[in-house]
Image: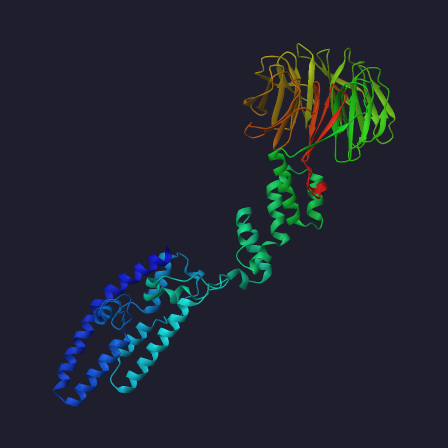
Amino acid sequence: MFFKAAAASWRSRRDSLQNNNNNNNNNTTTSTNNSQSTTTNARSNSSQSVASLASASSLSLSSSSSSSSSSRISRTNSTSSIPKQQQQQSLLQKHVGSPWLFKVPTRFSNPLSQSNNNSNNAGNSKSKTTSNLKKSEAQTNLHQLSKKTVDTDDTVSCCSAADSACGVEDLIADKKIDFLSLLPYELAIQVVMHINDLATVCTIHCVSRTWYHIARDDQIWKPLYLNAWGASTVPSTLASLRKGQRRWTSLYSNRLLLERNWREGAVKARYINGHEDSVYCLQFDQQRIVSGSRDNLVRHWDCKTQRCLRTFPGHTGSVLCLQYDARYLVTGSSDTTIGVWSFETGERIATLTEHTLPVLDIRFNDTHIVSCSKDCSIKVWSLATLKLLFTLDGHQAAVNAIHLHGNVIVSASGDCHIKMWDLRTGALLRVLTGHRRGLACVQFDGKTIVSGSNDRTIRVWDAATGECTMVLEGHTDLVRTLCFDDRRIVSGSYDLTIKVWCRHTGTLLLDLKEAHASWIFSVCLDGGKIISASQDHKIVIWDFTTGVEHLQDLIY
């Protein structure tokens, strides 16, 4: 389209100049007639010179007569007020919009312009011979240009006949300025780094070999990766990525593969068998899985080999809830006690006995332990002294789940309410209502609360305002357990399914079935897998990392 527009522009310019040429020709004819009165020989020589130069200034594009064709395509600029160089730049600015992208030739190599200029200065046989030579040479060059196969790395593609006639071919056949290749390599990298768009960087790969090597540089892919997934990477992993010598192109491609596996449901299920009864709770990281069961035991498993490495005996009832970190393992049981263990040695440090009914959920941070119970209370303990600090009363039914983030406790109860409490003072901050039946699970990340209920729905809440922003419907029975990250919400239900939802839109992404034969009590996830526990005594690892490398850098 550009070449056609350029040809049209040149035709318009040509027509405007045609009148000037006709006037010049008339003036030349008049001058020639006047000179006939001087001498017959001069008139003869002048006529021959004019005829010769007129033929040299004509280039036929059709089967029309040579005189008509010569008059139609002549582009003599001898009387034009716009210089030829300025016309070329004006044409580029009008149709391309970026004249700096092209190397504008210092002058046209169009044979017509040269011939017409010569015709205006013709007056002797020497100028006639020179004009004929230039015409022949220019036409040969133009013919070779039209047949030349152009290298896409250096020049633009060939033009139409109309473009050639208007001189556009001479303009566009010249090489473009590859500004990126002319820059020092370090500056070229800095330019591409500011693009910060995957599709554009991938397109740069296809321009030329030089651009390909620039676009493959790790300095470009590092900000692309961190901008796409840095916010969802845990701080320790992110710090390791920034400091280490990484192949960021490889990390990016592996992360894309991992996301595709999630999107397409490319998952493999692996089973862990070892508990002798229902598995109620679990937690995992990249190296280990810790689970609690109705068989009164806590088991520590190797995540890669699925072998049991250690057991934590001591409870006299079902282990209903647990949490661990590098120092401690804290468990809650149907025997109404809370166990505090050294995770490294397996030694039981303390037993907390203030609850009067089964302990249903437990959370701790660097300073506090928070527990909830079927006795409708929430208790806050000092982790340093293991002493009870205060009790939160307010729920009218069993407090089935709690979550702790910063200095805020979120509790979910069978009384259909979610309550937010201040960890330091015990003050009630907010009450969230909306579920029609009792709640079974809740999670809080500081900004968002996600809850699951016996009304078969999942609700997403804005913690700052208490507003319900989404309701997820799809389960056909009690939503017993859930967890979420920056991208997904995973829920497990008594309908024997595990569902994966989009965190931002609420769209159902995956529906995982048939791995469990009974109620699902607990689910956890990270960037590469979901692990679930069920009444059928099994732990299932849903692995989305098939074909993915560098998992230690990708999992968040």
